[in-house]
Length: 252
Image (cartoon, rainbow, N blue to C red):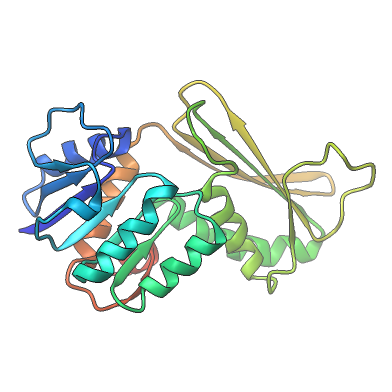
C-alpha cells in the first residue's frame, strides 16, 4: 500500500482526491496539510508541511504558489517524491523545482488529465504541418471565477508544446488592447476567460486562409484531474531523483 500526504487537503481538489483515494485499494492518505483546518478528515491534518512528522512514500500537491517553497524544502529534507500540481509558480520557483528534482523525484504537470496530455502530443504534429502553411495560432482558456492565476498553467503548457516545435520562436501575447498593428506572424495569442463554475475549457485554434481547425478539451468535473494525480503518485513512489511529467506516467 502506497502511503501519501495530501498537500492542500481541504481545498476542492484536495477533497476530491481524498474521496478517490478512500475508494482505492493501492494507495492511502496518511496525512494532510492545509492552513484551513475546518474540515473533518479521516487522517491527521497539519497547518504547515514543516509540522508534518508522518512518514509517507509520496506527496500530492494541490495548494497555492506561496506554499510550494516550504513543500520543496520538506521533500528534499525527507527525500519524499512529490507530485506537484500547483500552477502560477514564479520563474524563481520554477528554478527551485528544477533544483529540488536533483535531490528527490518531482513530477510536475500543469494539468493531470489524460486527455490534455494526449492533446499536448497531438498539437506538436498539427503545428508542424499547419504553422508552416501560414496558419495563425490562438489559445482560449476558460475557468471558474475563483481561479487566481491567468492564463492557466494548462494553456501555457499547450503553448509551450507548440513552441518547442519551432525552437521557441513564437512570442506569447496576452493583451492586444494597447496595440494598433496587424498580427505578427510569430505571435501566439493566449486569452483567459473567468466566470461561473467552469471546471476547465481549452481551445487551440489554427486559423488559416478560408479554414479554421480547433482542438478542444473540456473537463466536466475535477475528478479527471484527481484520477490523474493519483496515477502519478502511484508511478512516482519509489522513483529516483529527477524531473518527471505525465508522459512518463502514460508511457509507464
